[in-house]
Image 1 (cartoon, helix red, strand yellow):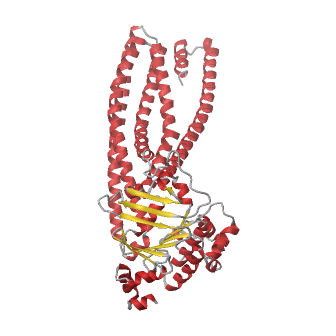
Image 2 (cartoon, rainbow, N blue to C red):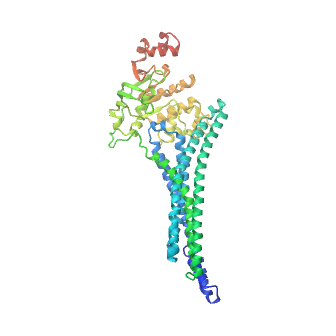
Length: 552
């Protein structure tokens, strides 16, 4: 492009005469060559820069997801998953647009601006001095408004994330929304949320539009002034018409480049705001960290567990003690049941054992190793869990069961399914094990979902089994089937059972009765039922019969 004004100058100064026809032809042939070169290099630039944009965003998404998925549950107590998804999608898409397109335009125009200004100085030092005076006048509002646009861009992205959070929750629980006829209320709330996002975006657009208008006026105002000074030089004979044309073209290139940079400056500030949000996530260190030199757990695992004087409070409720002076031990192959009223701290025991959190005081050991000294991944590999609410992914039944051990063969998956009694309902599925289960397994009943969770635990074949109220939400028939599957699963494993229904823990080797985060009683079922305590009260309320009958 910088070659074009030189050609125009020579054509004008040498004149359109027949004597100079061959020379002029050479200039136009050269212009055609420049056009061909520009076409080839522009297409190459487009491909390479677009590829870089896709590559950067792919790596960035992977890095953010890798980092977020390794965070402890305390992180997700403070951050909405909908907002995190917004950062992974909307923010990275914006960065892709900037890196793959806007950055290319910015680089090209930056080079053009530097080259054009250099050629301006070469063409006329006097007129170039006027141009150099114009650059600070143009750059100053660019910097001032650029900071404003960046701040407003961050605000716009934050409000957009809020809309994603609300929409995600409403759609995830759409059956609850419809059951309570809450559609109109949620529609109104969503409209309000998106209006807030619109107002934030409008503020950003006003700032960008003002910046664009100001810079374009200043740029072309200075060009008009420079052109007037140059015209005076032509009239006085100190400058040729071709030289003035060359200077004007270079000034025009400078102005166009500056205007283009002004346009993309707003986009770059948008990307900067999005990048801040992403790097905020990447800068958060997991609260549960891998030791620099982790202690290896014994191999093979025995399944011994001990809690020693544990005191714990959740990070979001530090003033409320979840567990206090909590101690117990489980030998290899032993079944320990933990019962008590809601909020007593039962599920907290499992969360600490899985090392989702660290206790404030005390030690938790698995096979004699303090969990703080071990790699959390190695600890969790020693455990299989059957939760109260089973997570079912939008994949086939086979892949959902294989979640327990991703390298398992089809034969191993089907064997685990037989032990967990999953095979009883597989034959009724349209494609058997290859049937897609839909979002959160809506096609399965509660009992079927629990049996899938049990099959995962069977497939994992870990020495420690954690059962978190695995039958609390099931009907009698489903509970009976699930209990059969659980009895098979518990064989030869250390099992820790959390339960509301006392009928599910009667066969435990030892029952811990928990109230207010403390163990208030422990022992086998028959001993506890004869005591006049919390366990007997729970049994009386559930069975609604004399204690003697409850023991039968």
